[in-house]
Image (cartoon, rainbow, N blue to C red; front, side, top):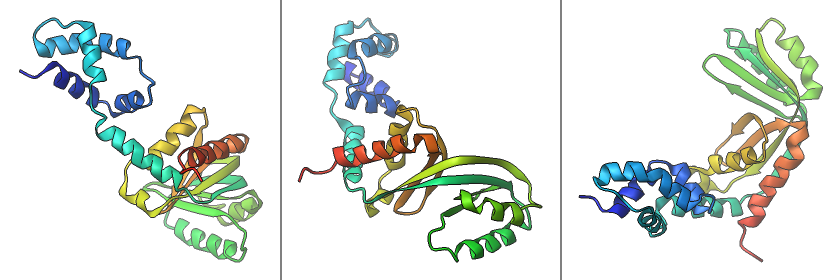
Length: 224
């Protein structure tokens, strides 16, 4: 028969988000023990005192998720420049045989401007183009025969430069998005390369988004 501690740990480990919240002291242990008690008793085949479950939870080793959290925090501490671009517009078009040609024409136009911002993401059925609002007329002209599914104005982007190790560690993007979500910031788009991660948000939220990312970097950096 499994021990009470092993049963408790297995049940908690089924939810990595729960284990993560525990590592940050966001969970009331007594309430958690009360919630787990019926399932633990079903597996254990006998009644279990709630206090015993509390003790089993407190005795749990830090485990994998705690170690992963420490690694991610180290990555956050090594974040490079945090770059902000404002006054962006988002266009999403339905994929078509002619859309690629229009994308090439757009890139030829934008590449002539050193300070232009643009990002193109092609999905299975649609393609999203994000450009500086000053290029809206160019988009309207080049893509006038394409089917526009959605568009949004008054957007801004914040880009973080990540250390190369980020590609070898899962959970880095989640860690960033989690902190933005906790502050009620809606993500309009996400753009990434190997060592850059960009979130596109409302212009109204860009100051808060920037502050959150800078705080993640500052709080996890080694003190000078």
